[in-house]
Image 1 (cartoon, one colour):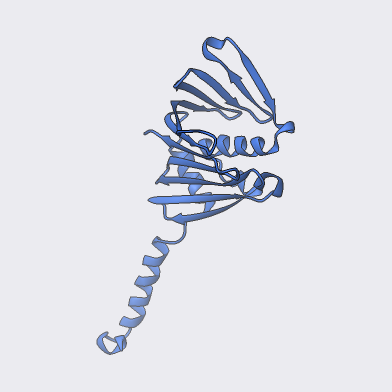
Image 2 (cartoon, helix red, strand yellow; image 1 turned 180 degrees about the vertical axis):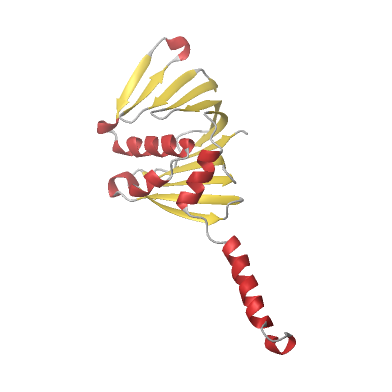
Length: 192
């Protein structure tokens, strides 16, 4: 038995030390992760995105920059062709190469796209707490290396979106994986 090898009161000291060590590796909370992400916020970040789909003969890779503002996420695609996507609270806007054409998709007509847009805007901005209303968020890891799995709460959204996975280290988001119900998957890697 351990007590036999410890001086009087030593057993309580070992338990106290174990408690401190366990507290240091306590589970990461959504609020703690949000604070870490916002403390290390980057308003603009380069990305590489790979879209896999049963309807594509090969995965489609794109590269560009993302810029986050309090009201929007702007995604400037540099390759394979130049285009700009703006994810706003009520719509997505697309602007073609050289600003030659533009289109809008109102989220009132596309609730799954609205949810995905909200996830992308809030995740890149580090605003995870607000997502808890619409997504169940399960965290694994600790403040050094973590991942978050977001499951839609709404059945309407879950018909289109299976889940979103986030991966990062400390206050940096590195990977966003979006898995859709129709077999499509998008992996976005954010560059430091």
